[in-house]
Length: 272
Length: 342
Ligand code: FES
Image: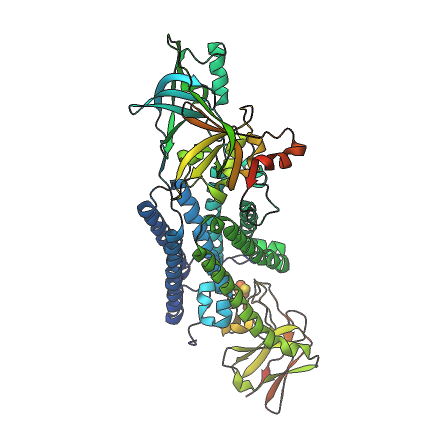
């Protein structure tokens, strides 16, 4: 090192060699950092297309159902659709459903409901967040015709393999919303009442089939499946279809003590 | 500048250093956002923020951990070291943005408090593959935060050098947690082996650098095992004017400085942050620490008034053209007659 090139922190100017060394260090660091960045960007993903229309509210009119999920049967972009509804944050829209039932005397069919919320869509599915809570219900009016639900049941037990996801994040609020990095978030959403879904990939790795998860009696079992979220799972159960929405009914665990062995009959974990 | 602790004030060189740091961050973030907006346009902005700041803090942490051993191997890099604490605090702020966004996104607006959620959402603590990796990141951030908050010399003075140093050595624990956080989280999520290989290479690179320095310094310290009363330093010609030679004596490193035909020996450890005084230089008659410029008089190991730092001094003798240092140190700040060699 040059004799006069001993730099001390409080000196205003560093010697030429020191300055040069600092510049070299900066250039090498930024070069390596950018290389790492490129490599990371190249290997991450792929990310599937999904949308959350944050800040934009959309209104729909139609009949509301509560099985297999709280949803509104309506028309969206000229297509008849059943749009499932979720609450703000990591919560279900059940408080809105309860309030609605209070107004309709417990019945849902035979009423034309007008709702406002934020659209979430991906993989050909459309969901809606009731962003304003109870304020999302704009109008409730009786209607003359009553829709009938089309129910189809498989009648036999089949095995489906996929990943249990929370549909709110999965269909657009977050991206990516699968696998380990999103596991805790999905657990919180499902714990908050958002209906869990088994998302199944096709041969190309694209998600193409979705099943609501219920017990044999058709009830929610969110709290029983939390630790199976975000990992590959196989579910054994009966499949039914309600108005185009698919449900897999798996063995219900009766209490916490027998939860694991019982659940393991219904859910086989892969890759653990 | 106060007598109880010295803060190094802003100066042109320091501003230049910080401008470089800001430029580094800007280049990295602009590149990250640009690449993602063009090639991964489906990703949400929250994901881009979380990943950009996570990756940036990971890179900065590696830069920080490289500087220390690099300066020991080649003192030309000392210029990079002296403003390292700004680098450290900045790295923590980047990690904090990553952590705060992750917490708000993944754990906020839920049925339990976000901090509880970090610990209680994924409960597979027994599994390597499914381990709740965010917990590791949380603890790493806590350590880095503690270090950032106490990085000012005020804390160094108030906690005492040993406690402060021990606290700041926790950067290695934080680094271990960060590596596990990254390997068990992001990398397990992505299928490519390339990322895993890069992180492992970086980890081994940092480990090897530290190991190299440790081996070099252990070799220097070998002599300390000899419990002789006098330890050989060597011929005075081995030492350059205004510079020192470091020898190990009874488990301590001693710096023997040559200046104006005289030799003086002081303990090698600077009382500021433990910088190696023997790698410093005598400027305006004072031994000047290479790390942040604290100064000591070679004759008595005391910082010039009004400062109060003191280091131990040692007796020297000349025999048959060879310099020897006495293994027994004098108390800190004791005046010792310099050894005249010409
Ligand atoms: S360690 Fe900071 S001046 Fe010596």
